[in-house]
Image 1 (spheres, rainbow over the protein chains, first blue to last red):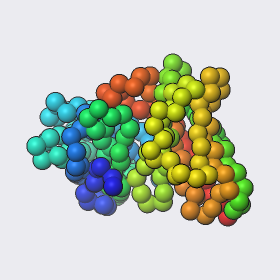
Image 2: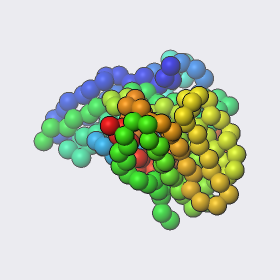
Image 3: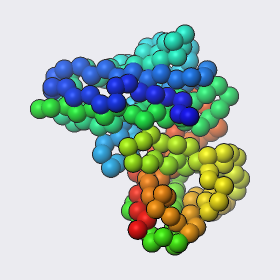
Image 4: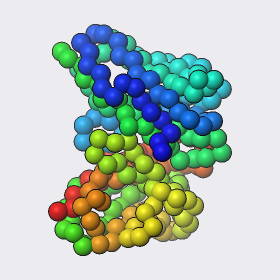
Length: 111
Length: 115
């Protein structure tokens, strides 16, 4: 079964609003990564957060990690139409190397 | 420094034909991973290779699928006697080391359609 599960499955917001999506996982991890995928395109790496980190920022993105709850969140602030995409969390289990992806959250930003 | 290259970007095959997907990792990367994405789903790990070695093929279907990463040239994912269920996007990723803290860099993918 997939390691990461995103919630919600889909999200529709107005330009300028914030978008928050969550990811839950099952086993102990080395790190958790967030990716963006525009329709029909490849994956773009957004942020990697290690198991000993609690929060990371990159531009308008903020990622939190709560290893006690086995969950992570991705916040996109001041959303733009160009943020419309699917967002995936992927985990790397402890002592492993392969990424385990969730099914993703589809975000639509309305102009 | 060119990113991960995959070709072809789109591939159409009839049932029973063979599909060959190529992946050239980023310069300096000797670790390659293949993932498959079915429609409306996340990516699923298939196989992990280093030069001339298959390290982990636990995600590969037992039949018809094979992968290689020769000393020279790109990594190849081969699907023999394709069926409609093989229609998917196949992504290759590379990393410089096996270190789990390194991110994997993804190529643009090959979209396989089996008719």
